[in-house]
Image (cartoon, rainbow, N blue to C red; front, side):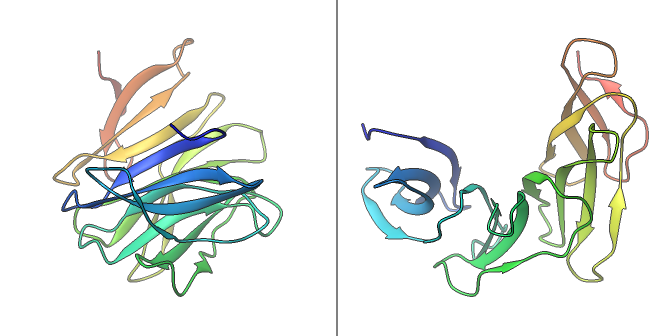
Length: 178
C-alpha cells in the first residue's frame, strides 16, 4: 500500500516482525514492521546508500543485509534493533543475497567474480573463514540453506536457462532440483 520500492521482506524466526526495504522520501532503508498488520515499528537503517535484502539470524537477535555504503554492494551485520551496524570483510566487490544457516554460524551469499559471473560463497562467522562453493562460466545466484543446513538451493545458468540447483553445504554434488 506504500508508493515506491517495497521489497526484500524477511520474517523474524518467531513471525512477530518482518524486516523489509522501503523507499521513503528518497531514502532506501530497512524497516521493521509488525508481521501481522504491516504497521511500521522502527526504521532500522538510515543512510544515503541502498540498504536491502535482510536475513535474520535463527535466534532473531541479528540481521545480515546488503548495503552499497562503501560504493559497491556488500554484506553488513547489525542487531535486530538496527544498532551496531558494521560491514563484513569479504572478497569481491558485489556481494548480495545473504542467507543465514539454521545453526547461526554461517552465511551463504552470491558474489560477482573477476570474470563478471556470480558464484556462491560461504562465510563462517566463528572462524571468519570464507569459502567459494561454486562458480564457472555461468551464474550461480540466490543461495538459501535448507532448514537442516545440510544443503543449499540456488539458481544457476550452468545448463543454459536459469534453473534451481541443490548442492551440499560444502559445495559438492550440484544437481538440478527438477
